[in-house]
Image (cartoon, rainbow, N blue to C red; front, side, top):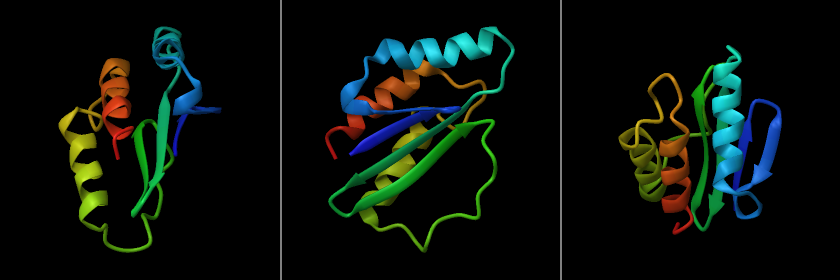
Length: 101
């Protein structure tokens, strides 16, 4: 299960069109609004919460990530999701790959 939250709008990845992500992110950026993206992934032994953009800081997770979770964190960074401003195309690319988890 993958959930995507852009500011206050949350959807299941399986139920949305990538254009929704582009519209949510680019629309807010063009309006000068801050953008916070949170992605929740739960599949097998993977249970991660990823964030990008202007999100409230968190205290972190409940321990060290397992091998598969670390791969997800590494891929999140490789596609550029830790950079500002958020690139909606990179987010969609990440989510399409994450479907295979």
